[in-house]
Length: 93
Image (cartoon, rainbow, N blue to C red; front, side, top):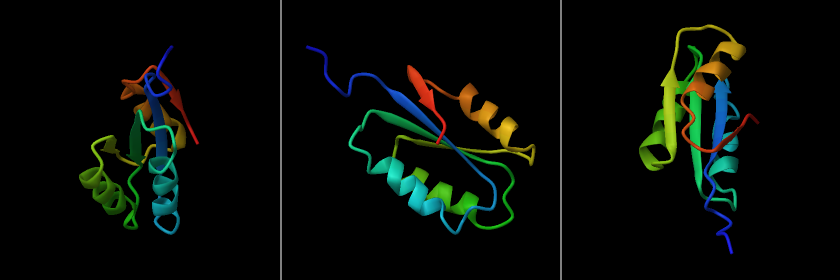
């Protein structure tokens, strides 16, 4: 019988000036019942404190990777996240 957490899932969260609700989003992913996750947070040159929030979570949870890029738009940010995926499957919220 296969372990329900044996398959690694990659969750990509792109952010641009989302500090008002970013922590709620990350908490939702972290507190998921499925634990074999890699969480890729891509900051697209936010001018608020979104990147700092991402970095705080990265320091607390080894499953989290933070990428900061110059402002290139949401499609580019998603592609950046997809390029970093090491799990067997990925999802974009």
